Length: 110
Image (cartoon, rainbow, N blue to C red; front, top):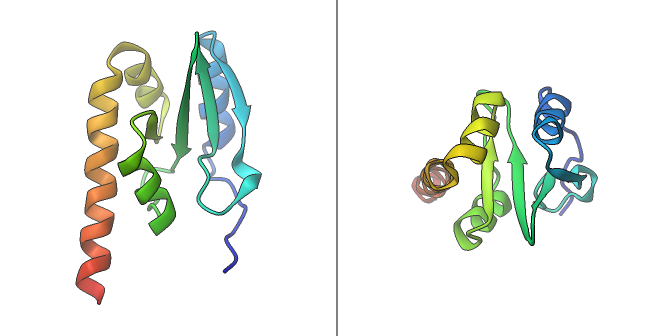
């Protein structure tokens, strides 16, 4: 199975917003196979950030990764980057809800 290795239109803006806040950012968007687009390093912790446009949807691998990794979130805009900094748990909850919604829709298709 092959996965597209394209980035969302807001990818560079999100990456730069993290860097502007002083985070070290590793762009992993070209890895494919459901890997997160960015690794954001904060102290001794690494967070996995899936960048999505405003209406972008998660694929199966992305939603599974988010559900099973407490350091994984979806970021859509600069407000989400600010939420990451100020209230990670709220962003995490929002990301989990998005991943669960994706899985529910997938189950209904079957």
